[in-house]
Amino acid sequence: MAAAAAPGALGAWQAGRVRLVAASCAPLGPRWRLPASLTGPRLGSAIWARGRAPAAGGLPLRRGYGSEVKTDDELRVRYLEEENRGADLKERVKMNPSEVGPFVSKIRAVINEIANLPVPTIAALDGLALGGGLELALACDIRVAASSAKMGLVETKLAIIPGGGGTQRLPRAIGMSLAKELIFSARVLDGQEAKAVGLVSHVLEQNQEGDAAYRKALDLAREFLPQGPVAMRVAKLAINQGMEVDLVTGLAIEEACYAQTIPTKDRLEGLLAFKEKRSPRYKGE
Image 1 (cartoon, rainbow, N blue to C red):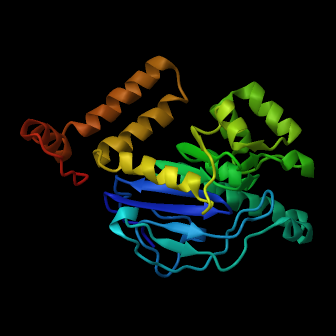
Image 2 (spheres, rainbow, N blue to C red):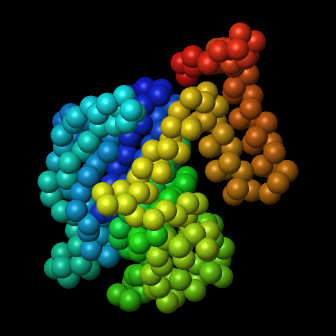
Image 3 (cartoon, rainbow, N blue to C red):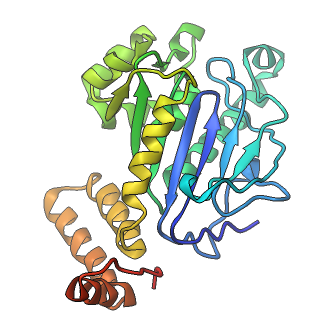
């Protein structure tokens, strides 16, 4: 099922208490598809999956779906309700060694799909994010957490290593030495500690509803939504690709990405709106 997200929509996906908020200010396009594990019979263009917390290292992969449009204030969020809990450590014990590799590869592929979304993504950590939950958060552009949240890559306690991108994304987020320390020790951080090491951008006191980080993620997404959709898409591309190369090559990537915005109708609309002192009406064209 294609995900034809419309500009101005917002959605999210949750693994345990890690909610992914996607500000769909850039259309995903007809060729982009959600991972098979996230698609369902009534999947909307903007999504939020809600599920129970998986065990450490687990990620809910088998899901059932429902859809409901919320109010305009909640930016047309849609729900994907989890009916089946994903694999946990009890299931892992029952797996043959030959089954483990393909299973972890599936998890890695899902997380990579999230990392490659062409729209801004925000991970909201309101509870536990251990193992695969934190790896999902690391695949997002921005992470916010409640002070009471707990997060860590704890796989070495189980005589394995992070397999959903954690060994690669955590060093890129907080630096190699500190990432090694956290992975080697299987240490679990709370929200304040995660903010101190740069793992999350914002930390908040938890509220009675238990969704302080999610509300902050929505506030951030509302700041992103009015911007030019094409500009947002290529800005993310320029940053992501530029961080993997030297500065000279990175500047060349920036130039190529900037060039993609020049012929757009949105660029002209932005200039006209500025001249007329009104809010621009971007269409992603």
